[in-house]
Image 1 (spheres, one colour):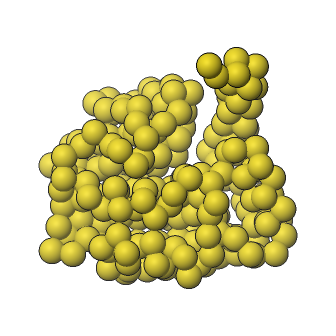
Image 2 (cartoon, rainbow, N blue to C red):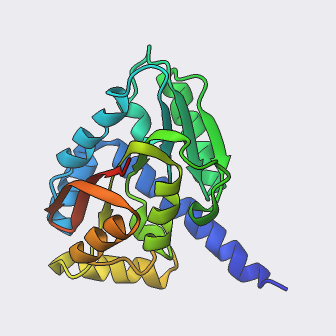
Length: 221
């Protein structure tokens, strides 16, 4: 039988941390200085990466996993006619994503509660996968990337970023979140490169900015 108090504490922490994270990442005036001071990163690279969503032609299928509070929604064009699936294991994050979509006037987004390692999507379903600020939260990033790659069509792209270890001042932050169960084991830049290639992806871009690694990769045809 689960420890009710432990489950309650976990959910309360998720709600508080999730709200703080979501507020910070949605407001560049706040995330920019935090990115510089805590992670030594230029967060403009993250926001620039979101444009890949709006670059997808009409008729495309896009998977956003984990969608969090809907960060990548800001990359969509209002008139864009795509299938957009926002997936996350956290019910509270999916609720935030729904509210964010309503604020942006976005209709037709599909919301799916799922574990990244066992997603309910057929093989070769999506033209684009985006994975922003999520890979470092997953207990097995390598397995997550294998599953994300499975859902991509041949020639489909995966674009995202993740925090990496052993980059000075951010390590204490990463270690604290790992102890609290919010972050997974994470990895170094070389690990990210290996996870991507082992999943069957061709790396088009792998760029480090402080403790953030930005990547874009393509599934082989």
